[in-house]
Amino acid sequence: MNCFSYKWSPAEDGNVPKNSVVAAVAGDGEPVYIARAEVEGEKVVGKVHSGHTNAYFPYGGREVPIENYEVLVWMKKPE
Image (cartoon, rainbow, N blue to C red; front, side, top):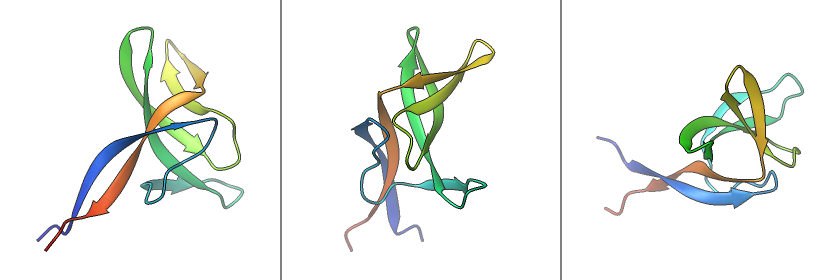
């Protein structure tokens, strides 16, 4: 049985909320988190690297930096 639920939580300036979902580990050993934002009117999924001041989103063949975004976080379901 799944004990967790997930939601999108607002974030900005490279910050991530507590309980953010780690998608990968970068070459420097820092976690990479799952983010989403609106780019030119479309919701796009991207990434947030620890220590960066933006989240990054693929769009139009390039990586778009955005300061305000949402991060996927997990929450334990009440029993």
